[in-house]
Image (cartoon, rainbow, N blue to C red; front, top):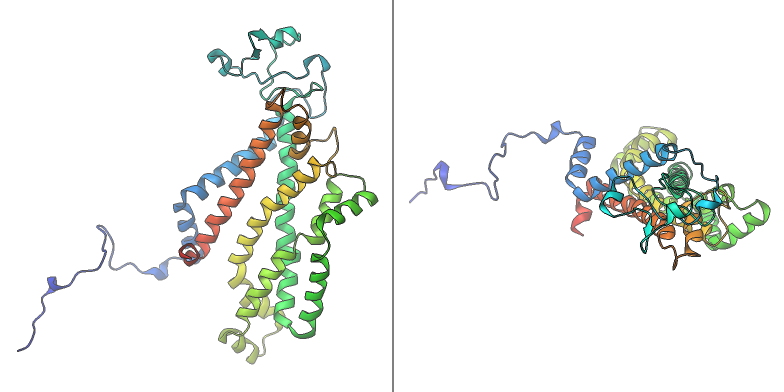
Length: 334
């Protein structure tokens, strides 16, 4: 007895309503596919928006008033935040324990959106100017990873042999030197500031990236398409740039994004312990250090820069997670 199947005997498993059976995946480019997966990650998109807002505020917010990051009005020292709209709701109205401290200080009619510090400097301006330093460190960390770390890892992993041996021993020597010792020595040679932090990142900030890139190159260079290119006489430079680099670019971008929060935290920590930027220059670490001294009396002085720093670091971390899932969806299942 022969079996006769009808058209309705079979159905697609987990078929969703409205799906297109004739969808041609070849029409989707890899970049568009990554963008689509990234946009589906709500946390990553929100983090990207937060970073964009912080960048916008760091560029334009310091110009909304006449104050600079170093201008002082001693009579206006330690004033709490006062915001025009919220003051009508009894929030951020400059009143402490029933006393209008703005009127008492002779600042009636003035508005300090984030308050002032113990020297009468506007914390709104100083916070966003300090955020520029953190964003500079973020951009610098990415450039160092993309240029030095990636180049070092590509050369070391592709050529191997004695070249790889020498380059890896060099990295091990650098890794064995604590960051604090390098920064301290730089402070002795250079004065504390952004230059010493920049040099410190140039010395050790690319090591993690180089190791990741080297591992990826070692995995790829034994693949058939690389061996075919070598057999056809393609130069090493062309193989690295045209065959290997496009296949590891996703990992490079993800790794560079993860290195940004570490670099921002390093700068803030060094500024907090006095090895970073010095007064009257402003960075988030300097503001946290200044506000920490008056934390029990004026908690807003440390709460505001800490909040901006936390949002910035958390946003970069979540966005890096989103990029990792977008470039390699299988990682999300592990």
